[in-house]
Length: 345
Image 1: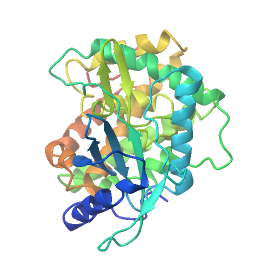
Image 2: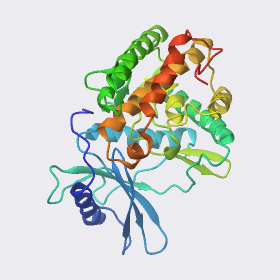
Image 3: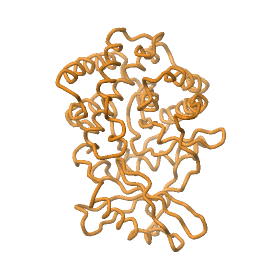
Image 4: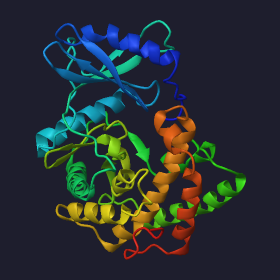
């Protein structure tokens, strides 16, 4: 279950994971020699493998206790279905020499065995705020709608298991990323105010409801770091946090760390235009967007608290609570409305 095992993927643990990556190469049919390079330390630890003839792969070593084996299997099966059913290019897992896509290994120093998945390498460039993101966001809206429509029709495997990014998953006592109150708050006054914002978010989400057309399997972490620009395509990677949520939470996650900029309104409009080219949205859908963006702010506050040593937290935590409070004031000042998508802009 998420939130049970504390995040601890730095220091000596990271070195043990490096050893595990090197010692696990023989689990797949790979050429030799292979170089192993650290790519990212976030929920999991990912490595790029480079082969002797320019081949590349991505090795993900899963955090202990975040996903069960069935949870990982569910993600991989959905990735296969998205590519096979609707032609959406997604990271595809590579089968090990034993015929299993999920490998489990351990080295001395690690408290417990770790699950690992080797993925095909997907070319592309991570979007940057230094470039115009309107067109990539329009394409992302299109991709998101196709993901959601597929999820609505997809027959889930018997072993289906994923995180829930609902009220309990973000605000509950066993929230996926911990208690937002443990995040980088400046004082108790912020906590008290944000508790009032939380109450209003929960009220609006309950009214909106969780019908199959509004709530289901979604990516749930479409921030810029999980997007790749390839020609005229916007591709989505890292489905590790895919789970059950409101479909428009994917828009909220796409706005992570860029939800209160001068350009945010244009990005939302572009995303919605792309989405509507594939799927329908009604007035209630538009009215709930601000609640989901605020909910994402609380989730990130919690993540900054439980993952304080990550580069992402260190670089972005300062002022995040104050900005959340300022946005919360505007949020509380306006009722849910499809004509005022983000009242703090």
